[in-house]
Amino acid sequence: MGASALGNIQTSWSLLKRKDIRRYRRFMVDAGILQVAWLDLTGNMRMTRTRALDISEGGISLELPEAAMRMSMLRFQSSRFNLRGAGAVRHCRRVGTKYVVGVEFTEGLRWRAPQGEVREPVPLGVSGTA
View 1 (cartoon, one colour):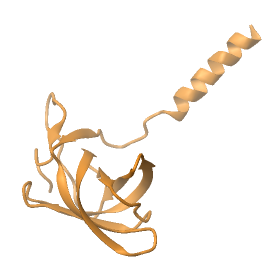
View 2 (tube, rainbow, N blue to C red):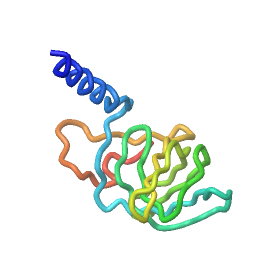
View 3 (cartoon, rainbow, N blue to C red):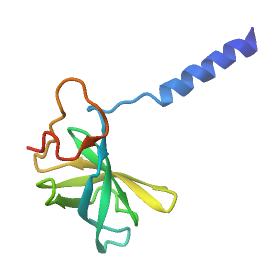
View 4 (cartoon, rainbow, N blue to C red):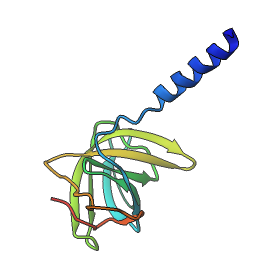
């Protein structure tokens, strides 16, 4: 009984650790290429064209070739999607040879999620930004 009970506790703890605490639903993005400017870990400005991985009403996840300084400002734009904005780097983690950066929108920027049933990935420009 002790080992079985312990197994259930570990499973429950594992589930608690993985609980999604995000405020907004994320949507996978299709063909979301952006021009991005950010500060690297030494404080130098970097620029690149890269892809968006997912987007929510409160932020966007991007793939970068170099790490971004946490809590620094990042700017992005896409003429194709008539999109321009800024955000604060909330997290940055290495995945293979790239870095996945989570950005929280700033300056009142919000992305409007599509209404109703949604098929993912969504085009980056769907519903636009406000």
